[in-house]
Amino acid sequence: MATKLKVLVVGGGGREHALCWALARSPSVGEVICAPGNAGIAEVARCVPVKADECVQVADLADAENVDLVVVGPEGPLVAGLADLLQARGRAVFGCSRAAAEIEGSKTFAKELMARHSIPTAAFGAFSQLPEAELFLDELMRAEGAERVVIKADGLAAGKGVVIAGGLAEAKSELRKMLAGETVGDAGRRVIIEEFLDGREASLMALVDGERVAPLVPAEDHKTVFDGDTGPMTGGMGVVSPTPVMSDLEVARAVREVLEPTARGLAAEGRPFRGLLYAGLMLTRRGPKVLEFNCRFGDPETQVLMARLDEDLGLLLHAVATGRPVERVRFSERAAVCVVMTAPGYPGGYPTGIPIAGLDAAARVDGVTVFHAGTRRDGDRIVTAGGRVLGVTAVGEDVDDARARAYRAVDAITFQGAHFRTDIGRRSP
Ligand code: AMP
Ligand code: GLY
Image (tube, rainbow, N blue to C red):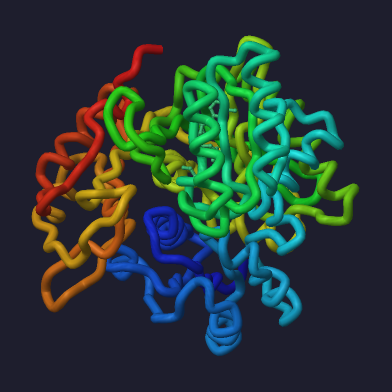
């Protein structure tokens, strides 16, 4: 490439910090701009105070800076049509169209798409009326003898719209609350009731352009807030990659049975996907089944994947954005572990503005990069500005080594009420 790429990254969380960090290290990239970014991103990119979901302002910024590539981090702007707007203005964009983003924006759409294309997933029903929903619940739990059932809000709920209920009474009460808008507001006025799947969970992401699918390495997220997979669901408390949960054979099977038919199905239905397709999978005894699709990089999965990536990220994303094929994405053999530090109270309400100490000491631990999720600069201090605050990420020879380094760095960081799980990467294979 004759001239170096000028790239605009949209978003301001841990995922975007990891993307900006990897882009800034890419030989093909000359400059990284981030809107709006955060205190950590400001160390590797030029931050501009434009919010990610202000689509017109983002597009205006891309024009004013005449960037060569826009990389969209969060799902909100994709669901709102940011990629379409940028493309209409002639910009290369890594991020899918509004039509394709429905795979994340509407769980009903995703489930029905899977049904139409025989993509393995849990049995389900979609409802907006309580009586019909209760009938379906009764049938699933009484007739089929299921002990647990899953109730999901149809709309976007930042990873918090899923309840696993342990019996009919609990299921009915959760259902009533969600449909009444009491759990996650309007996102829950339509719900999916789903068969409970037993197995091990893994996240598998791929660069997708129409029918072309280039898988990344799998990662294992830890979704609940407390150790031992207990407590309420969050957006993700920590990630490990590689994961013993998913073998190379299982990855190949999931590409064949899930990612490729999904890409083909979307293309056949006139919604070709261009960007990052994320499959949340349950690896059951009967093969991989889809828990959810996301239309963007996972957070915090991206933090560990960028730490292991053995490629020029700028070249990869630019290739997808301009319709050039990507054959294979290489990752180092080393392991990476990300431990998320959160504000007290998360995933419920939490305070912000808490000063953070020890970031420099943490960054000095060999192999460690501290990705900022919810932080901002306040004078010469860095303070918390979100629920998930930091993604402390380490690479090592193997998972144990990476885990030890990550927790050494976590121990160096202090802020009042800081919470993190102590068991990321410690589960038995
Ligand atoms: P989702 O947002 O749909 O991925 O759901 C969030 C989390 O809820 C998943 O990561 C799983 O841990 C759990 N979950 C969702 N659906 C099911 C299911 N059908 N069976 C078991 N666990 C589930
Ligand atoms: N870590 C889960 C997600 O990005 O949705």
